[in-house]
Length: 332
Image (cartoon, rainbow, N blue to C red):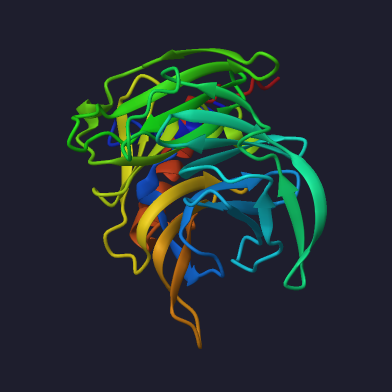
């Protein structure tokens, strides 16, 4: 009997007890806890993405004029700008080679940006990125304004080369809450299609504020949850994991955090989850500023002594059964 078979079948009092391997269909947010929450030197953080080339976080504000690079512990590394302001930036995703795609809320516009010039601001390195007048764009619903209820988050999908987005929904015009799946080819002209992979309202969340794709982490490749999505809800104060067809798999309650107005989520290569909020981060000698939260996976629990005793005892019984089954050697 192989060790794998031994681990799966323990004979106790003549009965075979089969031990099934745990299902791995979900990342399982219940296995995460808050590693830290801290203030960051930034005004009204509305979106965040992980830059896998630089192992850093890129944060935007909803006024559409400021951006900044931060370390994974919240240290500000750069003070960045845009050539011309966006109206209402709410989401950002990194697509590689120093390029990002922004989500401009009211007209539900995706904009491709890259570095234009470099310099310094306040002693920090500064990059000027493509402005709203220069960027290649895709407008999800033809550029029709839906007010302050539109595109709140965007995430690049390495599996398809496309994107996922979320519409906040609500407001006095009864704008529907949506999860978008987008096939976009930036260029001159930019082309794209928009579909809705599932009914976002079925999840029972209030005001979707961002989305992340687990496939953005190459270390998740080969797992059953590689294709899953993380959805962030501002008003429900909840982060949920769902399949690409909208099946709810796990969730994390954010209501106990000091950081308020949480509007951005991203995942780094180690599987840590980062959130940014507009207010609630307090640093010594300053007023309330934007906040950064890191969620990290809990260390696997060590089996209790009683569990170890049961396992060892079971293995001993199996070993005895195997010895009894062993054929006797012939003697001359």
